[in-house]
Image (cartoon, rainbow, N blue to C red; front, side, top):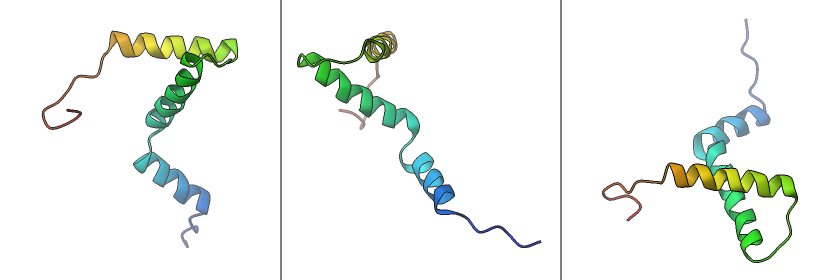
Amino acid sequence: MPRAKTTYKEKRQKAYEKILPIGEQLDAILKAFDMVLQEGGDLPYELIDVIEKWQAIKFKYPKQLQRGKNE
């Protein structure tokens, strides 16, 4: 049985998962929206709620510095 040809969508999905995990994408997006909010910009209430929950999680579980990383 011949192998199905890999589509560009499948190739992109694999690359995104490997190179740019969804968690990192969301973190960058939320940081950008948080900056907008901190500078006095308006955001929808639902997004503000998401940002507040994201900040609470980051506060509860702070990033720990590892030797040679993030220093």
